[in-house]
Length: 455
Ligand SMILES: NC(=O)C1=CN([C@@H]2O[C@H](COP(=O)(O)OP(=O)(O)OC[C@H]3O[C@@H](n4cnc5c(N)ncnc54)[C@H](O)[C@@H]3O)[C@@H](O)[C@H]2O)C=CC1
Ligand SMILES: [Mg+2]
Ligand SMILES: [Mg+2]
Ligand SMILES: [Mg+2]
Ligand SMILES: [Zn+2]
Image (cartoon, rainbow, N blue to C red; front, side, top):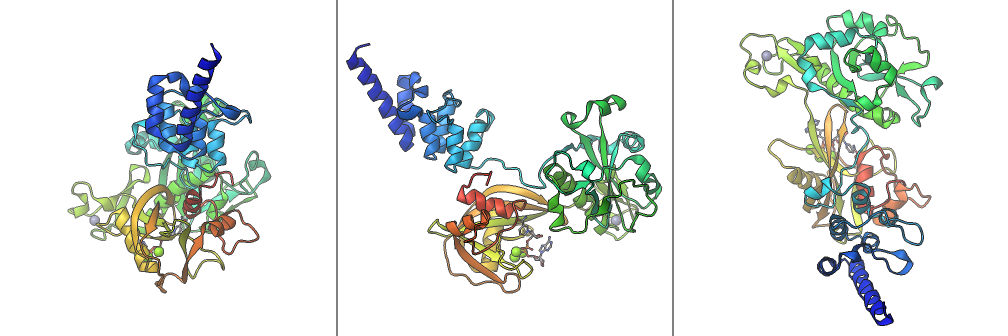
């Protein structure tokens, strides 16, 4: 190659990287059509087009480069991949895209939002809903020595703080995984509701347990008792106790157990609140592994077709971070019951016949007097107090004057990006405190500030 050819190639690479750096999708795509080798070319300090697009937050360009087959594992001269760069500069949605295989996600049109796992969201068990109607299988599992039972007293779970349970876990508490022998007396009682939660996913079953079970499935059940059962039960763990709460104590478990609690507590709470048929007031019987209550009154309307009152309820709630029209402040409020200094996102129940977007606009107007324009879904979180689904959104205000609804909110204020970052990192300069990391309100604020998730 002559020096003239060399410089022509260098010039083309330099131009290509310059377009990538500025996020010029059209020019970058044209140049790749002309020479696909450009995809993995690097310039100064070993930066590729993908790295430059990741550095500057050009999500669509990153997606296009991945779809053309560029190598996302290349490193620059500082040893950073495009993923490291996106993470460092706070482009979480790009970092998420780069960490995956880029294939499945590409089928969906980009919204810039990737799925985020919140506390209470993890599916540790496989629900196996088809087994709920298999009464033979359910009763065989209830008699199996391998089966795990979780016990609740008035919806407070039995947990242990014993040191022998704390290996490899940062959580200070762990759910007591009782065996049949410990809860046998309760299972014989006719008024005890036993809810089938699911089976351990294959990868979390230990091999020794698998060999002892005919179908290799370790089932989990949950039961709730109203009288304190400590006297009649055989519980050997002297460190066990019923965790009084629900808040903030339920946030002290690990992520796996948070997910189990979200399911178990919500279904048990439904049983404790719906003792009688909501349609006719008659007696009901528990069916389908605790996922249904069937009315015993002949002719009750709830027996015709599928009747929603027979199944566990979920209440949808919108929770939203409202961004100031200047893009640099967000609206947070405090309820009278919050600890001093704490502010959170506004939230409210979705009403019948209402969309998520309209519920966001109505609740923000009711609680703060601020008018909201566009609304985008970000992430959701089961909230088992008793059974909400928090639907997390980000939205933009089109008015900024605040007039709070004093019945619900004590104060609402615009906070700057820096102020909420200080609160999240618990800086000594912080002028407010935020809900803990387990609450979706915390994630919404973090999402907005594009902070890296390891903060
Ligand atoms: N995970 C998180 O980060 C947060 C969760 N939350 C949860 O969001 C939920 C809703 O927020 P709020 O501001 O209280 O709602 P809200 O703003 O709609 O006001 C609550 C009032 O709405 C009425 N209401 C309407 N439908 C209701 C239903 N299905 N259940 C109970 N009350 C209903 C009641 O009068 C109640 O006092 C609460 O349960 C709260 O625990 C709230 C803030 C943060
Ligand atoms: Mg509210
Ligand atoms: Mg409200
Ligand atoms: Mg409301
Ligand atoms: Zn009925």
